[in-house]
Length: 293
Image 1 (cartoon, rainbow, N blue to C red):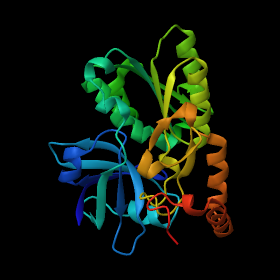
Image 2 (image 1 turned 90 degrees about the vertical axis):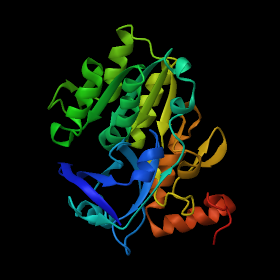
Image 3 (image 1 turned 90 degrees about the horizontal axis):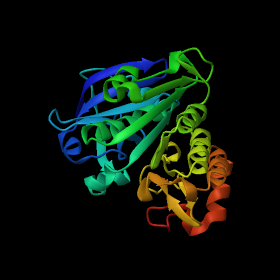
């Protein structure tokens, strides 16, 4: 059992929980995820780590309520316990494992949309703590759906750029419009990292790649099981079959087949669609052992 030290609703359907998990907090890095179960009967839910504190021994998860499992998790309050939290899983963001002298030569552009605002945060915080130059663009549909504004203002200051689709707060427009403005203003970026809904990542990546910026995207939105056994996060990267949970979740955006991944996501939502994908993909349907029945 793992104690929830803090639980708060960030907006109508997104909750944040700070969980005591010292072993995970000691080793996790930006870009990685955990698998949680609200109780012994609940489904396993993979969630990207949205913050961690090594000294306090805590990790933070941010959950969007979209079904029974996420709703059950969101009902756990400060002082309650979750049954399981497993991690850290997945590969860390690539800059974490590179020589810091090389990383400091670059300037990063971080782009987060919707719930993707949360997993972008530890990457931005890591750059701040390691004297790496960056700008960050965060987008949401309306002001009411904005999360973590205070946290970003503290770690990014004037390098934090916020936009809302409907113009109800700050800049009006998609994240791509802010990206285009920053690039047109003469800002040079070596790497772009985009995390959010698939359609947002597709066009954010296109905007960055068109400007000649090496771009990384996190495919955590398509993960379901978190171990590669369900086949949900199967995607094609540079012509090869990959699985977001065991091979990622971050990939080179220029090599990701976004259209194929989004079409597959739509099919996977129905029982008939899952049966079709399993029959069509054969042994490559799963990423854990590749031969599950």
